[in-house]
Length: 267
Image 1 (cartoon, helix red, strand yellow):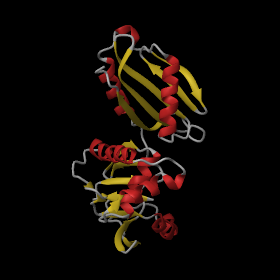
Image 2: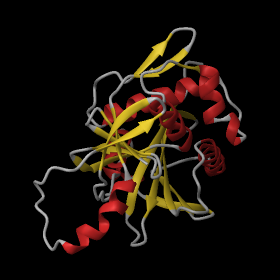
Image 3: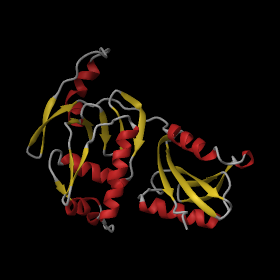
Image 4: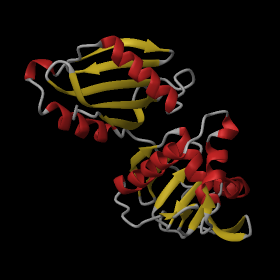
């Protein structure tokens, strides 16, 4: 199902993506927990949802360990995801000592509308792109929500984010360490190192842990995983970046999402 947030951002719960309603070329990929969290908030838009409900719907129901710290982290991920698309309004409101509320007008791009109109559309050889879409009302809980017909959305490479972050990290790395190379394959995920690392076994353990934590399905969805680290000397890792880019049938990237970890280097 696709939900339109304030007629600006589209949330595709099946593809686990966010993109601008008027510009489908900029796509932000969400993790599975973040997708379930956003879906729960949207389905209860305008309602205060307590933490226990969110922990149950997002983690416990699926057999995962739940924690308030994890919930806070994924709330932060969602806020950053909307911000990365240029949406600056506060959508997720923190309710002290209770939980969160998603404050937005929600429209639904209802695929059922397509089925009912597909026969008629096939008879039309040319349709004006300026024609106003039909709308229907869909019940979501006790609220009526405007629903828009489906629009074709083409997933495009979102490696721009990856490139920008790589440049940010690599600017402090010597020129002879810019190469990247494959170090492992986890099911259908190829794991690459960018630049120099000194403990490859530690890198692979870190990547494995992140893929498991973020519920990346390397069996069903072929992906390339890139690991990049920023070091102080040879032993101390100041920060690392892991980017997971899913691949389409033509071996191009559909979407990428990034996980940056800042290390405590004060000791």
